[in-house]
Length: 257
Length: 216
Image (cartoon, rainbow over all chains, first blue to last red; front, side, top):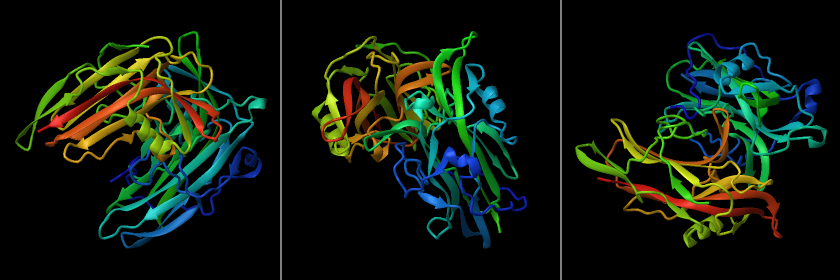
């Protein structure tokens, strides 16, 4: 039973694992800032499984677990800041244009001056029990946007959101797609302007997760998630212009050790 | 602001919601439909027949909201239909097919109906629902414990066009049921300002009352 994004695990060889993956590297620390907090409310709806209404909390780079009587490990991929989308596996620009190019035109702004505060980045694994025969695992990212409005970053408002292109790499293969849950726009459903106990903020939360019973657990989840704004302006051909700022490349992988 | 009945065919609504069909309204206005499940005749029907316009919520709405979110949100009921343009009800209907039953309400209005320049337009809903024999009392249908706002109401984008709308969806498998759902949903503005005690101020304007029931 899969709670949000189905990850069917195929039978290919186990993936190499990355340990200690942290969402910072070099100059990226200016914009992608570790700010780990305990599990907290996100301001988005509660969902089945590990809820998108609540973060996993902290920074858990890897977890070992037993599945099919064999040792397995799930680990976060290094999260990296990006001014523009660039992962060749995901092909963010093409996927986005192919999916929404009829109604929207995308303008890449090439970065922000402010920060993405990473308040949760980690994995979980729940081994099967007598009462719950399914083994569940996944990994989550929770980010709060802190703009530098004086230098031109878009302020927090309800036209600001996130666009995520994601793929599941396993023996079956799930091609990259815009993570839109069937919406009539490209914006990710669990991100943007919300309110948490009376405090307005722009955030992003995702916990792609899976449940397996029997088939090999061997897969990688990969995503590029970019801050974006519906500008309210249109091109000469009538398309709504969406400005795309900077983003985060992130994901997790699971396999037999 | 008034309410107009302007039922339209199934259309995209811009929100996460509705698994069948995904991302679109049921469309139209079917007041009741019958189905058979486990050899029992059942009926899913609207309650009331058309949604009813409201300028002020019931005491139950106010109290339920205050009990659940009063610690962090100061809700002010303006009790007036301020602004331009009507609520256009474009889907209020029930459905039943070989696998499931459903119902929805879809309301569209001017993106910025109040002409406000600050704050964020949201919707607040308080409902009662569930098996008829065990009413569990009113509840806020919001985004969980962090805030009271509906996850399917406010400003969104539908195929490139910015719209203000509100969506409520019911879905259930095709089994015999006896349940009733009634709700009040109000347009509101999260002002982004705070009252003297530090709570975020939310202004509530006009709304609709609607619902549905299933009888076997």
